[in-house]
Amino acid sequence: MPGEPSRWASKQHWLKNKPSNIKKIPLHLDHSIWYHQFEQMKQEIRADILVCHEAPSTHRYGFRVVDELAKAIDAKKIFHGYHHKYYQDQINNEIEVTGVAIAGVVNLVGEQLIISTNHDLQGL
Image (tube, rainbow, N blue to C red):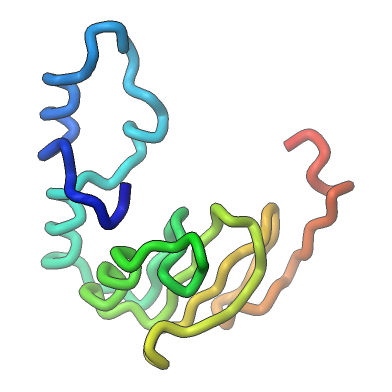
């Protein structure tokens, strides 16, 4: 959970200590960024754009650790999904944030290019 102390040092640590009844790695853990990876990314990566699933603090259900990562990598923009609502905001008047609507498409300025409707989402 972003922003909370990590219970596991790494994916390998989780695998070594996982409950015996779990045979396969849950999808959310298999595609997670582990704490050591997060710290390594802050030190080694530089990027203009951060694209992530979780929202930064600009969304009411977002996480400040996304802000922290964006600042550490010198990102100028964050694009995120998850909450499936289109919006634009800024973090400290520095980093532009665009929340992308479900099945939506935005350009690098954050303008919606494709706006989905419930009809469009049938079969997703």
